[in-house]
Length: 412
View 1 (cartoon, one colour):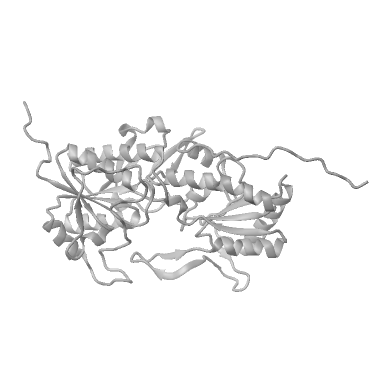
View 2 (spheres, rainbow, N blue to C red):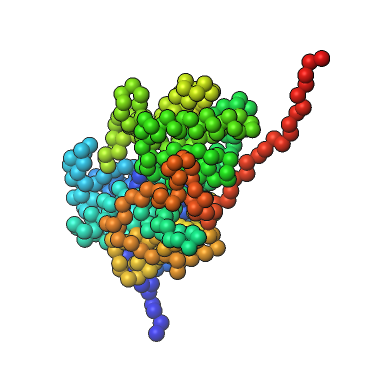
């Protein structure tokens, strides 16, 4: 029998992006928009995350518009707006959200974000019955997707979120490039990488083998551990042929303070966002200073900052967003809301297909730190298991070597 109309003709699906940006959000928006349009939906874009559903609303039509999914960041803009009451904003703005969903005749809402953005969407689904579907997004790669990494006969629960593969490649290449300046001055460079509570992104700086040591937030640097770490830094530096060293550290590293006798993080600002998160930053300077003072080795701090979030969407991310968008089609057809598409297992680029995906309850996402199989606590090193995980999604960076040793000239 001939079907006269598309299945969801007359329905409207809206997309919003919240929280920190990544290079893969535009690709996610484009992929979801394209598939929803094929099903017959009119597709809207909500600007600036949840903020675009407050007041009179801030909504654009994406249905028949060109969209560049390779361009990094999000053309829909973003914010850390929380529609539910928080310490920073005790007023509930849920009635404004509901009012605008009705005013704009939005039937389904797709939220691209991490635990905060998708957590708010899940609450709307549970308390107000709003049809929502979450789409994973984080540069930190700590959103619990329950993705399995098969390694040497073991199953390791890993994480794989859109945005991370692009950011991972940026950091891996950045660390490789820093090697030449560290070598030129016989310095140690402490490279600070985004990662409030997890060291997934920090570990990508060690990919390729030229960066042996790293620090992550999962393990506190007590007084004893800090002393051992500094001894290891000196030993590693002195045994290096070119007398240089790159040490990647997560921004959320818990570091022992000799003056206060306490372990804590370094804050760039005491101000918190609407989800209660302060802004970290500056731990690399603290560690570099202690290396210089206690070891007598010249050390410098380098904050990568927003660099891994910047630039265009890389190829793995591009395919990953399209694969997860295929799963959204399945969720829409079955009207299975309150769910988020994820990869079931870590697969190489050529195996990124819908049959390797599943969907999980948005209310059971949470955060996932590094598995113990990925970090050697005693040697401050990422393990071969973690590097095997990375080999599935990014190429190893090229570490250039100046291969000449000049003969030493002795005075006559």
